[in-house]
Length: 146
Image (cartoon, rainbow, N blue to C red; front, top):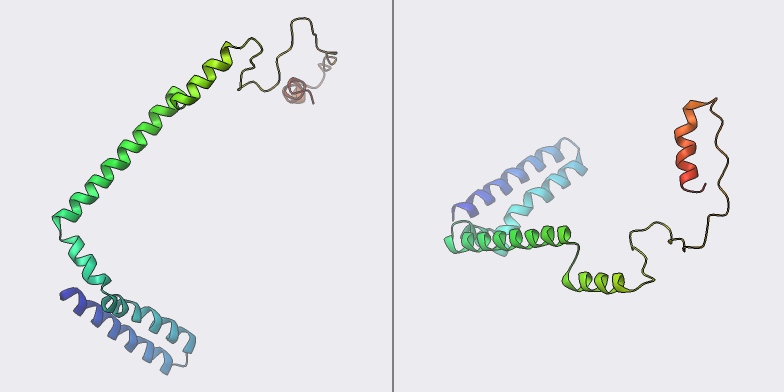
């Protein structure tokens, strides 16, 4: 009852301010203020304000919010534990099966493994030592084969 009265008063005050703004020939701003001031009375008329007031003062509703919060904490805890273990049980089984195969390649590897008999085609020549400013950058580029 009090919430409805407050919302009605806010809407009436907003419409009054919109009228004064329109009197000052600022019609666009007046229409915008009128639109904002009609929102509280619209919420009262649809019943949203009554529902919010009933929810805010209901111990059952607050207990429900507590249960939802607990569910969220449990869900996030399981996500953290799953990430530390390395995935779900199915993912760990698939990784174990893949590791048991002799031709298995580490999924985290950036390039395929070289076979025992193969060698890299050629190594690039070492950079001249005269320019130390770019030696780190050149080393990184050579490491990545650029």
